[in-house]
Amino acid sequence: MFDLDKWQEIYSTIRKNKLRTFLTGFSVAWGIFMLIILLGSGNGLENGVKSQFGGGAVNGIWITNGMTGMDYKGLKTGRQIRFTNDDYKVMKSTLTGPDHMSARMFLGNNLTSYKDQYGSFFISPCHPDYGYIKTINLLQGRFLNNIDITEFRKASVIGEKVKLALFRGKDTVALGKYININGALFKVVGVFRDFSRNDDEQKRIYIPITTAQRVFSGSNFVNQISFTTGSADPDEVDKMVEKSKSILANRHTFDPKDERAINVWNKSEDVRKFTSLFRGIRLFIWIIGIGTIVAGIVGVSNIMMIVVKERTKEIGIRKALGASPSSIISLIMQEAIVITGFAGYIGLVLGVGVLELVRTYMPSTEFFKDPEADFSIAISATVLLIFAGAIAGFVPAMKAAKVRPVEALRDE
Image (cartoon, rainbow, N blue to C red; front, side):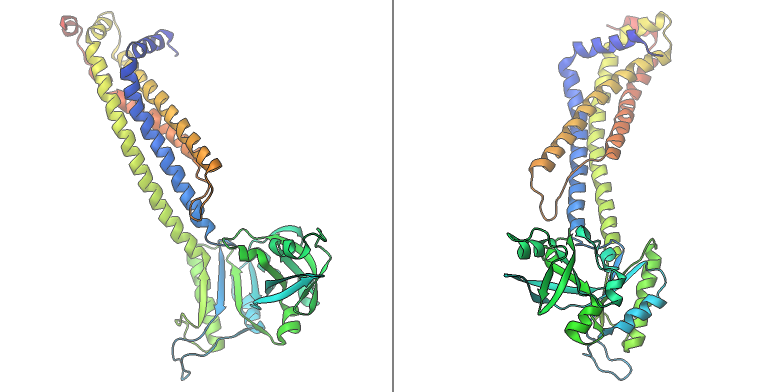
């Protein structure tokens, strides 16, 4: 039940001791402020590091051909491993678990032009699933489809930087136009933006892998096979990787343990490592922040002990007039909660405000981006404030409840 008299008394006590209340609350506000700043900064660091993963699904696996580094079954070191279309087909039909799979060729930079505009851009032949694996963000048009593959269409999906370089000042619309890639005309069917760490990703051109093999290489070789692992757990992902190595090792006769024969980038493994790292960083931040808050709680508790000492006679009179111990405990604990709660809320607001200012006006760096304290942190801090106030007032409140009226009335 709401007791107006009790709240008026708490307000009167705080007003009479403004400086003491301010100094007491400042330690709590500072603790919450530092906790919010540290957690927000940790999020900024995590966001920056995650952005360095580059484009692509977080559950993506890329397998690139290499050169053997071990002798195996009478075959010497230094053999070039070259994937083919058959490797892709076998992987697609044999490997269970992947939800998207694509082979890819590395044609490197090729002279590309539209009318009198020229540029050198990286040509990346692939299957349609690569749009999902690389998490391509289409600005216009579409990505490659299965009809482009089966009918050997000369279709192209160009990066935003390619569009700006080739169509500036002439045609603002690139869709439907034909660009010349190393002597062959390809129709632009889509324009994409890649949010990876490298501007070069925006200067890529994706074309059907079947068309590239027919027009540029005249062979069935591919350089990379990639796939996404769907909702598989870490153990299942590791099994997919080992199965992939085994399939390719059997087909190309190299030791599955030879790390130089094929290069495997398991992005989900990198994500797991960094997730574990930042989980530890967050735990460390919470320990430091809570330690700072505990120091503030001790200060509040000491002040409340002084308050109880100063009001011993008053408490004795209350008890002599019939006040219950629970009402005395409630009065002292509520006062402690009010001080810690109000001061902590100010620290919380200031911390969030500083983070917003930093986020708005400080330019993002390579490893620090968008520092913020999310809603869950605010809720956690609020619960922590209430709990801290209760702890700060509990010991003094229990001491007040044990005051004997006769002894209190003798107190000078």
